[in-house]
Length: 120
Length: 252
Image (cartoon, rainbow over the protein chains, first blue to last red):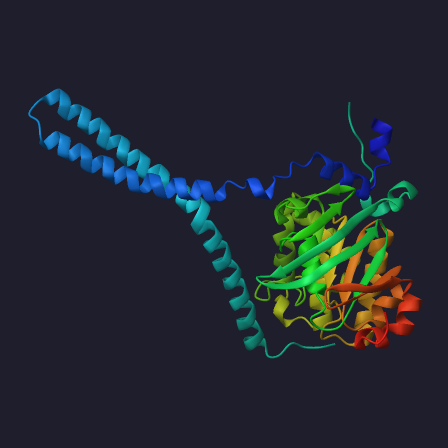
C-alpha cells in the first residue's frame, strides 16, 4: 500500500477522494423541510407561551401555575430553536448572495478608481 | 505505517490514469427556467489533456463549465468525475476534491493586494508560504508585485493571478472560461503555454474560448458547441480548418 501511495498522482488521488465522497441525492434534500420546521417552531413557541399565560392566569393553584411556567419556558426554547433553523436554512443563502454582491461592488469600485482595465 | 506521497507537481500523468477520463459529461441538458441551453452535451477530458470547447456567443460554453463545477444544476444526463457519477454533488465538495473553475472576468479581489488574493486560498489547508511559493514560482512577475493592489495590475497579470489562485487549490480538473478576454495575443499565447504546462503535470484542462486560434495551438482535442449541441469534435487541426463554417452553421 505504501508503494501505491508513493506513485500516486494527483489524478489518482482525485479518483480515490471522489470514490470516498458521500454525495447526497438532490431529490432527498432536507433543506426545505428544515426551513418549514423552523417556521412552525417559531410560530408554536409564542402560542405555547400565550397558552401558559392563560393557564396560569386562570388558576390560583401554585402547582398548576408552575406547570404553566415550565410550558412557557418550553415554548420559548422552541421559538429559539425554530429561529436558529430558520436562519440556517434561509438567511444563509441570502447572506451568501449579499457577500458575493459586496465583492462584485468592490470590484467595480476598484475599476472606477483605477480607471478602465489596463490591457497589455 | 507512514504514508509517503510524491509532490504532485513533479509527477506526470501515468498511462493508467491517462486512459481514464477525469471528466465526462453524458447527454447533459441544462437551462435557465423554461429556456434549455444545453441539449444533450457529451464531452470527456483525460488527465494531462487539454480540451478546447469552442463556439459562438450564446452556444452554452459557460453553462457547460458551470455544470461541471456544480454551480449550475443539471436538468438531465450525468456528470462523471474520475469514473464516478457525481450529478447532484455540491460545488463545495467538488472544489474540495480538486475541480477548479476560473471564471470569465478572472474573479480576483481587485481591492486586495496580490499577496492577499493568494492568501484567500488558504481555505484549502495549504499555508500562506506554500501558496506563495507555488504562485511565485510559476509566475515570477507576481512575486515582484506581491504588495501591489490587484486592480492596478495589467490584464495579463490579473489573469496570471487568477491562474495562480487556481493552482493554489492543487486542481485535478481545471476549468478556464475565456482566458483570452481583453488580452493582447502575445500575452494570451504566453498564458496558454502555462496552461499546457499545467496539463503536462497530469491535470485535466477544459478551456472555453470564443476566439480559437491561441487555444488550438496547445489543445489535444477540440469540440465545437453550437446552440447547446456539440456539432464537431476531433483533433485541433481538423477543427481549425472548419471553424468558420461551423460557427456560421454551414458545416456539421
